[in-house]
Image (cartoon, rainbow, N blue to C red; front, side, top):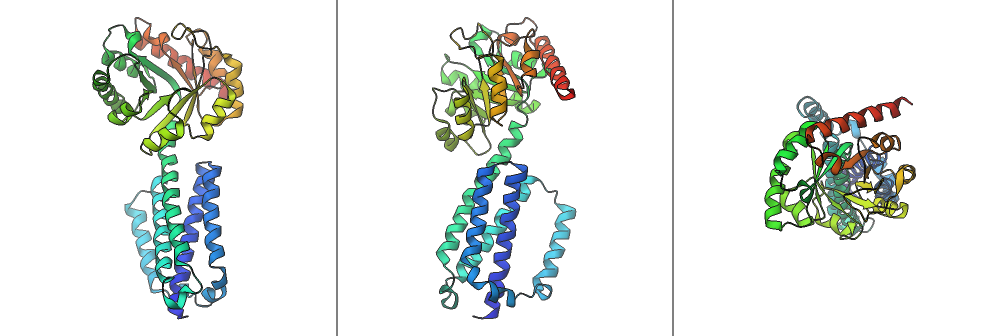
Length: 361
């Protein structure tokens, strides 16, 4: 086999292995996703196995220090270091492209008569397409993680029926100015044509203030207004089906009442879990009260951010924070107040002080 071809194969196999290891470690150490880490590891090991028969020949032809591409690649790297700030997303994208391009080179070389008897072009093609999916999944996790890390503090559910005619935009401004981190729009009664106009305006206000905007129940609405995510219940469309319909950067929250429901939601890819009703509530009279102990059990069971909901007010929010809730969802505690902004500010202050006490224990 010509030594030039062996050098090309060796260089591209090294690039693909190195790039895959970077992606694998991102999934393992930064994203903490065992399943995705294992998929990347399996791909790396599979590629190593299918080229193992060539190891001795490849090493024999390796001449890294005299590679004409070495100096130019180093110059390019130095230029990128001074001109291009790197983010985690940049890192993943660069290494995924590096692997994909390397696999394509080996795939094409494996079609040559002098190589096809030892390397299978179709195996490298399959690996390349496998990586396309892995790249998408990893980038999706990174983009969604940026949102889920903001799933903390006060989460206000803007129930339009509870507003009783008050202006949604004015109430939204007060909620934002008061310091809420997340706003969910919920409306079970209005026509979609009316609701989409309101939703777009609220989305714009939230976007300007860097507040997460979530749509309750309606997948089509979340897509139409480019919301940050969608919140679903146990009786809604299955989470995996919704995940396929949403853009890769959108988050999904799921309401649960039991530990099995919570673990199922986490397994299916929920970005946060809402548990309730923590206390008895007038907003949903028929809601089952699960209590603070359920919240504590859930905190020990799942790693997904947990939003506590149901009957939470100024009087009991400290207890909920102490139980481990990442975010506190309320309706009447804010929308039922004459001074909405003031009510939000008081709850935010209590949540912040409660979390500070927990950290100091």
